[in-house]
Figure 1 (cartoon, rainbow, N blue to C red):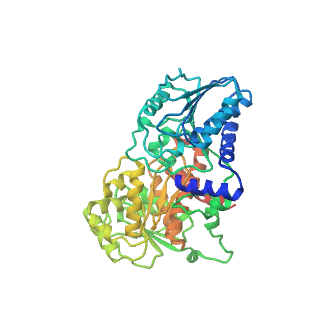
Figure 2: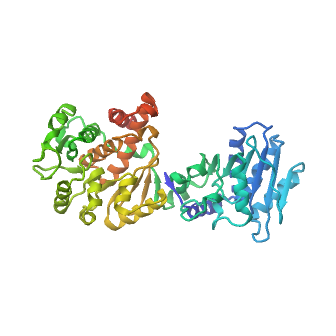
Figure 3: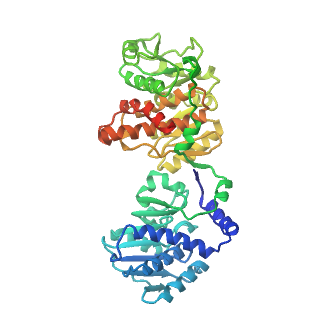
Length: 505
């Protein structure tokens, strides 16, 4: 599914008006009807609603919602329209103001100059129609005071389309005190990119997407750099296995992982790669890992380093379809040297995770040697060790896009909504997974899944996108059994096969 910017959505709306032969007022009515129906499904007519409408089309939506609620017998509705001299009412807002006033018996206040806000409490529902997606610059003046007043009131706040004060894409530099803290956001047709950043979660609240029947052809033809990964897309990418096949048809992986005291990471990654379908997996690890790996993952081959406790050499003793480095390797100087030598001689994509990234952070010049189309899977701390500190997920994503495009890499940014950035800067947002996956070893499992797919011949881009999605589905299946508190990384591994089966059915 495509995720569009505010300007792109505006163009789709304009195309809908032209193609479908409807007017702007009709589109406002569609949006208001969808929102009013959702509101009526949640609250009875005796509830008190306080509607704050701005001068643009977001305000028009709010005014139309108030009218529709009134028509359905909702009697306790108070409406405040901000018709301030510095901003002219939009045509839609002006028309919906007139329709609301014509109804009569509406508690309606048109604010032109001074404003005394109504008393609000936790039992009230506030409908935020101040600015929504029509905002062009951060809120200022009296609107900042109003937003802060609403947020402090503890009223249940419903934001129409986008919480006022929040931009649909980028919010760096925005004073977050001046953003509506919505309990529920009713988004029209699409979620916005900003909805997927952790720092904005408190302002979005619950998000419900309402279909307002925008023109499907316009949506299909519109270009974007942001995509929401869906089940059917991963299903279409996964190849069904032929009856006549053998292990050599599904690739071989060299997994460089583990050190003394950190062999569990190698075990989890190797098991995940096997469960993801890799035909053969070899684990290169210090000699101390042989017994552990042979007993824990008997299906994998063991390739012993010449050192007993750390990896010191990554020599390719045989041909592999791909190589993954990092889980539990440590950052010993000899290990950093081994990665240095490997990257300088490697010209095919590989997967770099965990301590492989930490080794690069310790010796930044190594970054220049990473083969193009390689997949990097850093968590937030690993990303910051290489690129510096970032205050928000938004800032981290912007940096990842810059790096991915410059070095032709694929970067997996782990988060509640994990994002995959491809070599062109396109962003693929994952929605599977749950809080129970925030557990030690979960990232090692993801490395195994991605590298297992890459070994089978899937492209680096699709291996990353599919791997993240499968990882999340496996976590969701594990959560149903163990709950978010009791889940551990091996539970995710145990559900990888079930996850793929579930997706492909």
